[in-house]
Image (tube, rainbow, N blue to C red; front, side, top):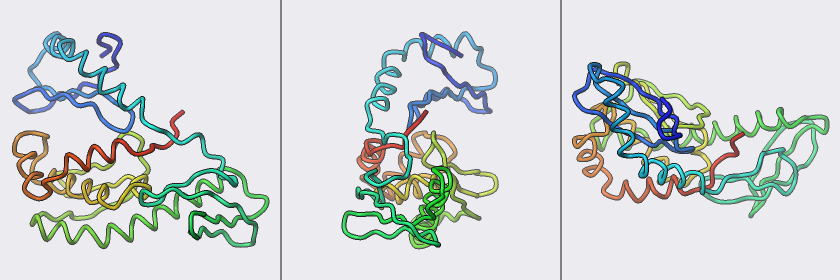
Length: 230
């Protein structure tokens, strides 16, 4: 749907009530609605929320974003919430080492932007996997909820997602650029979804029980520098 100039994704499900979301990191607008609800009813509802939606989308649009990455010396690179300055060196083996405020990326002289990007992305994946392996068991023990499996994936619209039926969760590679508490928040968020699919009162109560400051961390996560988007 396009309502008041706002693109809206509508997903009809076997639910009782309608739910409206403005999703990070780019302000994607989604509505979950009961199967029996008419498009006209959904449209009327969204129109009543148009001012609020535009305000939320504007917040995402005002967030700091990195410029398009070329992976050359002088660019910035974020690791666990800290900013580093990229320094390119040449060698026969790719590597990325953090030294002080520098991220020293060693690559082959003939390597192109895409090759460097792929290497850095896999470097982030290794970082993220190590921390997930450390933190996920902690939150599984706290909540009594257990993921059957997990996977990392580069995403531009979600920090994480889960399949309640299979128990599998996915974590966004970009979380390796954010602070550790942001990763913990997203891990908990997805684990709680294994118990409660929707962002309803029960979901909020569970989040409050296990992480009372989750709202502040969510605000921090959505306020940190985002990747470049075309």
